[in-house]
Image (tube, rainbow over all chains, first blue to last red; front, side, top):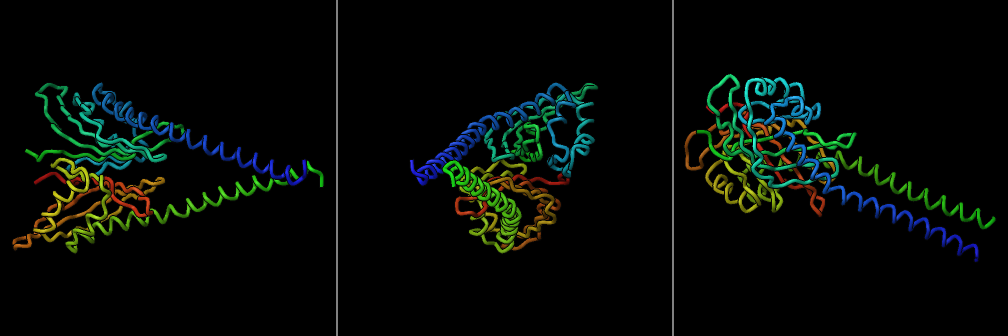
Length: 166
Length: 166
């Protein structure tokens, strides 16, 4: 074979290998997108499990250190410590009953994902007393960030009611 | 030069070119991130400009066709037509005065960006009447998606009050 043919052949081989590598990476990325959506939905599910079993440690572990909770009619809670301070008493004093009634949308863009859902929340004082329909019909927009260990955590959670206050 | 040396040289050249190409792409990406954050902040600014000048066409143009507005104490408005139907009467009947009081966070991950901000909203009936402090202290989480033409549009907007209802 002539020298120029060898150069051509080598170049083609290197370029083909590079193309295969990037095509494979792209396919891996597309495949993992479905897994990522499943993963952020599972974080939302664990959010409800944490509430409904009174497992505050599980619930708070779902947040990043700089996560921000944005509840209605109350200032934002910025960072895990503010969220802990605001929410620990609720877990201590109440039995929470949260139901994710519908996941309306869930998408992942690289290392950021979001879910829009609707939910209901009932609370019952542990000391006794009637169950309160705290959120008869709520909606929620939550953002999730992929962590360095591959897990997903909540970075933002903003929610409000679908119905006017009584 | 020997044939094997030509092969080696060609391989090195092709690999070096590929590495330079990807390093350059990465630098472009990092450089463009700051521009993207500026761009989504400008969409938020135009949101306020649209409200404050009564320019409904400008305001509605900032949304994607399947954008979702999530106002407090009211169901989500899903898609530009529902948003138009809900918001056009407000623009027709009221002078709006919205102020973005603080941008607390703004980030872009690939083709998705978000802003957390605080704002105030005053409304004055065009027919006459007192100005109402519709949102004396509000907070907002908005998501922006990069469009195929490179522009950014709002895909989600969820907001609520920092203070209890009176």
